[in-house]
Length: 359
Image 1: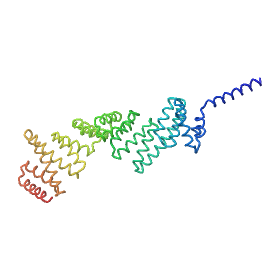
Image 2 (image 1 turned 90 degrees about the vertical axis):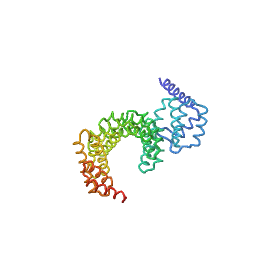
Image 3 (image 1 turned 45 degrees about the vertical axis):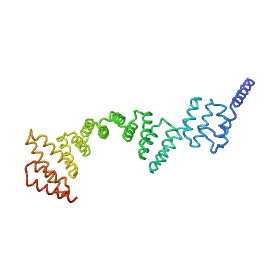
């Protein structure tokens, strides 16, 4: 029995020697210099490693372990594109090495991503962009790198690159909300309005009560000259946030340009009620009121006169508080004339003319 045990041990040792002898000397040398993934050698002789790697790549082009070491050296030297290419080849040739390759990919990704965040926080935007892009090369499945890179590129004013980076992120994670939102914004920044509209609609499908997304879609529709679409999204947003003066103002502008003067008047009146000091809104209210009243004067004189009177009242308040607002005097004169208040109209007209000369 003892002889049999000894024979088995000797056979095992012989097999180990045989297996060691089967490993090419170039690979054995690299193993010694680099150490393992979990316990790498602190200061490998990289020139020696490079010499052996050059030979190994030529002699053993289908050996996945060779490309594993090519990737490790590239990672040490911060050549991330070379690292990624080598590990991809190693994964295909020797799938069992993928877990080790992934450990290095992920370590490099984390280091670069954290550096990128710090650089972005310090407004070192060019460096941050490089770090985020490099981290994306190391671990392409992490959409965070591409999203952050897109945002930084946009901050640098490179909207084309921002769009390309956010497009890559969308391909990686097409159902992730932050990715869709970022890509939507970068589409708009790069004037890719049709795609941007599709992206914002996808965001809205995930957050159907978000007024900010509705307002973004309204702006997109306006850029695409789709007024009815813009009006629809503005009205939907205002159903949720009824005190959004900017949205009421924008809706009033759209109604005015489409000659829906009475609806425009209602919108600008809402702005004036919410923000009484907004002189632009007050003047737009006056313009809309005059046009609205004119459009119904033939069919409903009483209603028209009520609108002229309301316009006059607002212009009285505006010119009293801001006598240098020439447009206020203009629309006061017009509203008085519409109400057949000849003397008041002449006074307001004189004030308007004097105001214009004093500019």
